Image (tube, rainbow, N blue to C red; front, side):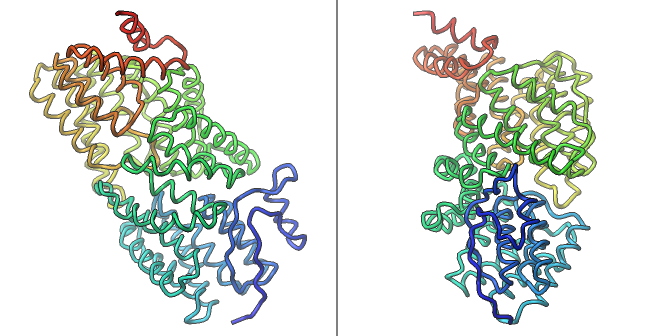
Length: 544
């Protein structure tokens, strides 16, 4: 093994003059990029080490395009740097997003094997190289979970062998989160809790580390745990202010607990930073991190009744003609969800049934969002023929996606949408028992299926739609239970608040109705002021 003096630098600092080209490449207007503080000793040369640590800091914030660039620069500065090759392989593995496509998995395997060849057997660096090689060896696109579990086991073993290497623990926690996310039906969040227990003490020791804040947000991104993530959410954006994803990620927690102003501020910053990146890189399409921020942004705007601002985002999404990467789930989802949210959250059923389907050949479930919106819009505006056609399209999509092994989660999402829309078609046909059964089934399935981080939430929660149905069937007491259950999972949602207030009012519980109407009025007071729900709340509150 080569014995170079370890250079410990923070990734937040400008790199040394020896790598001034890389420094200029990662600056905005002459100011150094601020990525947080990462210390990761290696046997790479002093020239390569700061580039490597920059790459790790970028990796921890999921800025994969830039991390790969930094690791490539490190390899150019030191052709014998095994960890630079490890970093290149890691930048192609996105454990909380989607499996790497075939070209990237081949590239990742080549880089991982190179890292193995460049590192000495039995060393810590060989352990890192072997771990990432374990993922890529045998990966064929359909066995993402199995390879991710094998990688996590390898990282756990490495962390156990080198207990003082905190980066090994951090990357093991990330792998745990990736596997846990694939268990969408695990309402105990066992792996997420384990990961948080690993990360919390390290975050107290290293409050400027980007990965610790970032991964804690992911660990707590669930209804049961979200309040525990407020601390990390309040710090991450300041830790890595130059990273678009770091500006966005706090909104995962803010969305979970209904802090809409904070979510809006977070995603505005993220969208601005993403736009800057698109311009700097001369991208000819919408970067998926930009689309992701816009979806969360429009969701938050709509909860506060800020419909004009939401329309601005919807118009921006409608104008997108190209995306980067071209087959990104993140963009496919956002570009289908944004126009549908804008109409469904405001009960614009006639307009919803006329939405255009944006093709998403790599992620057909994204097309399901539009078919769901069209089905619901048709059924709730009295068009049974169109509703039935859209529900048939959802049924076909459900079967197609179910046969794609790496996308079975999304088949379940399409099924929930099909059941929820079918309930309203059954109601339209006069089949009340069938309507209630389908709506209840959709709600129960969604209750035990965790949302994917790609989305701030369902277009309309199935439990909320169940409440709508019960209310229309003159069962306000039951409707109130449904709305309150929806609010327990998704606090401060405008439609659920209105439904809960109206149901309580019709059930004769004036005190409960007044409380919910007050919450709704406060929520929508920052909005445009023309929501019918706001007018109803003010009318009810004016009565003594």
